[in-house]
Image (cartoon, rainbow, N blue to C red; front, side):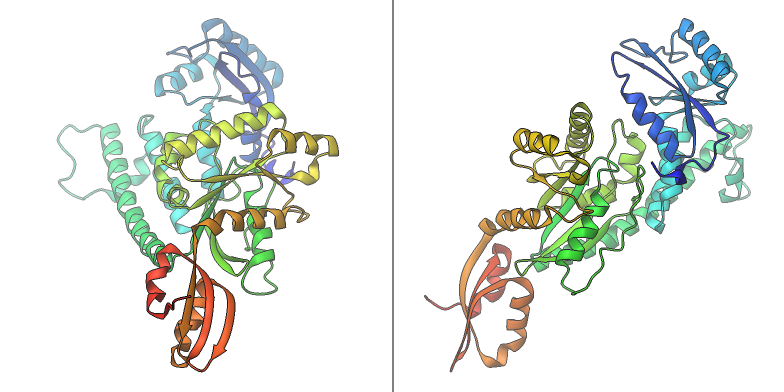
Length: 428
């Protein structure tokens, strides 16, 4: 993995989990910590159906964790689940070390990687909602956001003041995000009116979605010589948070391709809610390309697939047609590649880095789109050159003939655009 993720080696975490049989999950927690700049120096797993309501781990495991943390020289405890305020407080007291849960680690990563104004607003909203239940004087720095003299009731404690200020800030962030969402809705309506097919890239974080977006843009952008989508790529979790939409042309037909934030197992509900507008790009798509890391083991691939499918169902996108894309084929040996082709016969195996399989994916997208198109015979008078140019931009002329009356064209068009060119239709 990249050395860029180990900027703070002084942070050394002991990873702990309380679950029936999910030892493998600590691999992902360690990767999340590494992305956040924390080194994992030890692991402790307790098999139990339910976490202890007071200390997450059972009393015996708490003592075992304390001894292990001392041996590993850990200065931080990272839990693989979201903790209640009581669990976090009691565990810190019992271990004598700071405790963070899975949600806090993910929120820290999001805060580091958010680049756009909308992304920063979404992350701040998620952090405020997460910390509201854990408030212990954390928000005194927000006092300047208060309403001024007379806004504080008699006898109001500092913690009540902090909570009120945090709620006011949450309300303000929601209003700002609603305005951003309104602007996004206007742009989306214009795209829908144009009748351009929308494709969304969805998948587990670090599955290779951004690399695939760059490769598709480089191969099928309308502008010749385009060098990818300009999306930064790195081998780390949640490197891309902000949605990126680019125009493609496959067999002459336009498509809008959107890369969205990656999914992960046990994604904090605060993030699902805060990034609702971003995730909505997937719910409005006509086709979802589910990108799955083919270089992962079979069990890990299945867990990632189930996690993505569950998140898509949670946001209401489970009924949208999808195409499974197995990425990072360049990291596979021939035997593993053949095995994947047998176990996933409907999937497209490709390497966005080398470009192999990109043409196959484009052909599958074109095959998916064709049944939704209608063949029309049109006659454009020479004075209607603008309408003919619009047709070339939106559809694929299959035949063009210059006649004394005008330009005779046979074209494939989406059903939503048929009415726009109905006045030029001629009988066959």
